[in-house]
Image 1 (tube, helix red, strand yellow):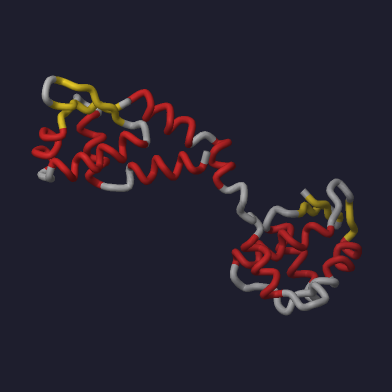
Image 2: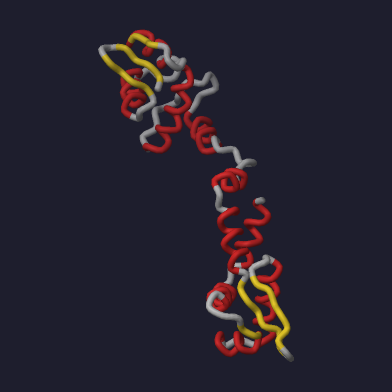
Length: 182
């Protein structure tokens, strides 16, 4: 489906074609009428209409000597509704590594043994590191502060900062000296 999405974007990726769609949304026009309205050559308008036709957005019907083009409004609405559905948006990025940024940050800030060289100062990079560190905690399991510190010491000696940031970023909860992963 992402090929269809790209085809639609390509068809609409030109200001003249968007204007043609806008004009045809109001009424059908011949190539010559569109050329005059847009101050373009008829051959240029025909080129644009061919691209829009291939995308299924416009169709032509003979009217005497001229072909009259009209917008396929229902096709446009259906394509945009279908193409921009949550499923198709997810499919469009399915082949991407959504953890690529986190992986890069971890590579930059980690030593070979998995511990941190430093705790990142930039918020986004710190969040990436925290998303990695929180994986060491089991969901629903409660940890004492001592247990949390033991696990965090594998990543950095400043366990207090890591603990505070995990809680502050909503990755862990703390109450009465007991911690648990959200």
